[in-house]
Image 1 (cartoon, rainbow, N blue to C red):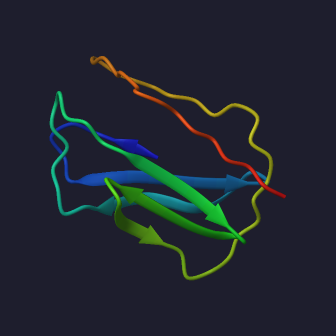
Image 2: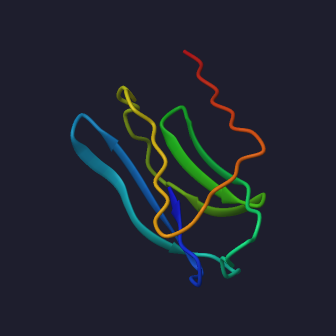
Length: 93
């Protein structure tokens, strides 16, 4: 999941077993600003993918997908600084 300053889209990707099941930009009803504060949520529940920005639903899959294994969640910041108040990761069987 990626936010880009100056844009009103969020990029989302869900890959399992080397297959991209969800991949693409999705339009938001807000523009991301430099210096702004945003809460992002990427959720997979019973195979359904859902994403939220600032509690606003942005995308929900109609289909269910395999979860796969996540070995290296990562963050990339280009030409900017990212500060995090907190990061939560929930995992259930």
